[in-house]
Image (cartoon, rainbow, N blue to C red; front, side, top):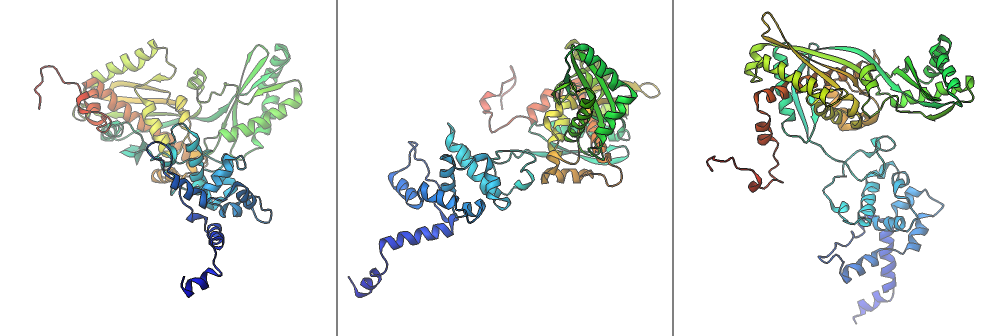
Length: 511
């Protein structure tokens, strides 16, 4: 051994090297090795295992670092590698659902990355950790405590723009997040036809979110007495004052009561400003029920939502009474546009609309389903603008009407009536940056500065008008026999559909 080597070995032992590596690992946890990739047989090589175990500290060491009382948990986690945090979680020392809270607001993406690994390795497929589901470069601070829990990433959906469409004299692009081919193109065709007649006119005929608690009483007699009190001026005033004390935007519009046996149902309806309003109305309803309980101490609130609202379920009460924004949108399409753009006739369209949307839906016993595909357009806009997609159940309730108009009936008068468009421009998914970008594009982001509620109402008018465009285009395609041809041309995934699976028309020449 050379003299230089002997001098170094005198004060640089293998143990010193080990300690030095651990010190570096402690100061720079991001330099830790990634998890060893699985071999074809599903197990890692002995060399990989030894490398991983060498760079991983023991559970006891990691726990000591994590539980060090002199620093916050977030600082302790910063001293641990991802694999060491995963080890702590797998041994029950860290709750997977609480990772964001433990890491802090500046390490939210790391929390998501670690959760992906924990869930992936515990699953039967083990694919999540290395999947194509994206998670990087996303503002999770907007999600935390507002939109989702146990977050492992986000799902991008293609965003298209139909139109523009003229609504009440102003042009709007129609944003649609969808994976259904032809939907945006078809809606654009409808927009073109509607614009040719001067655009769409809308009427807002109602605005009120609802909540319908279920309240038990010892007897039907007592439930009836409570109903009579609510229906009286005294009862209505007491509940209104309590309800409206919870928010400057919550204005109680009506109380509708019904009894089944000894259970009383009360349907609160209120304006909610530019919010969709479920949280607002729930808070107000709770306060009103507290005031009511002082008058009827024997009552028991079974559920704040007793399905008398009705939320996210088809219900005749929504169709009749309305929920959210109730909008009618109508337009006149010139006869020559029906022929040249829509490739059909006014007579054929009107006949098809009656036989399909009215008679066919009646034969099926439909509630609010007197339309061709209102849910398609509404849900695509809901996803693009941060609305609750589950509320498409009642929001897409729609009646489409068509009739000849003009001097000799050569033009088409078309309308949609939608009594339950449940939308907001503040709160919920509208806090997410991409969805806010879409609302910005429409000019309805956030609360209206002068007239609370106007932005949400405008969004509802745009949605109803876009539904009108979608209805007009689809019904025209059906009347002209073009629907299947369009879907075959634009809605066939070449990635997942082998060429051999495409049926061959008998007698047709093969290319």
